[in-house]
Length: 311
Image 1 (cartoon, rainbow, N blue to C red):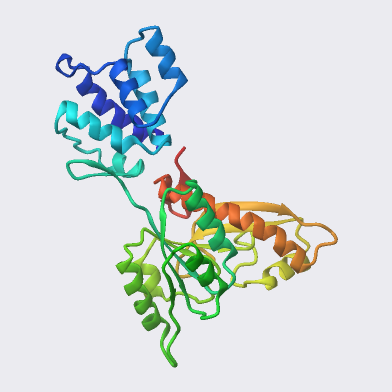
Image 2: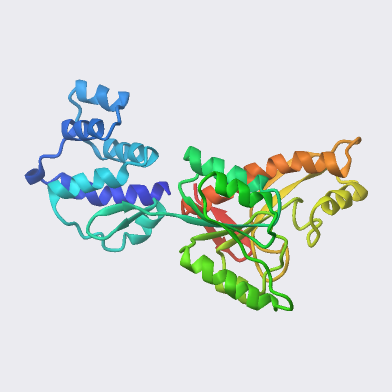
């Protein structure tokens, strides 16, 4: 993300150094304050009458990005310098969460969460979105189980909660096509399986290739293809000293997609499947939020089986 942000800053710096625009550190400081951003470093540079160097300009862009005010600042710049040709920088805009249609806007990152049970991982995502840790929006929570407590969690937070049962004798792909209609209507950028107890059809996985992620309670590829307490029971039977969880992209083969994030826990001699599951679940919350954050920020790239994270 830093490289894309720097590229964007450089394009505007090339314009503001033109004498006609009279953009200096004083103007930048004033506009930052108008946006509710007060920065001691900028104040110090202003006091000593420092020039608006390329390095300072880049620092300003990083500050604005962190404060989620970059779009507002760029629109203020447009009023000073007029329209600008961004050329091939659309990928850079996408990476920093912006879109441009003559004005800059924060790009909405829409998340659909599929659930079947309690929804503790869903709650971790909700909390991260509401705190601003994840810059996105949960646009729907969908469950194949009517009594899933996860649906109640969604309703409590004003999130569209949808019960979508399978019809009697319905083929897996037909169910998935009905599911896809809802997902497309919600314009989802990411589909999160958070305890969704259905195996997705090849049709669905292909349609949303590299857009579906799943959380599994083991360090894949170990103990894949099973779920719930059976995973932890197998880990204890095998005698592993370390267990944990994995967030991975979903492929047609169950629990076999490219790995995004893994978190570890030590296995204790006195552990039961229940006690191990409880500690792993805490790490699941962390791993799932971390993975969604990375993807929403455009920092994930898939190369073969490897997931490369941009720093």
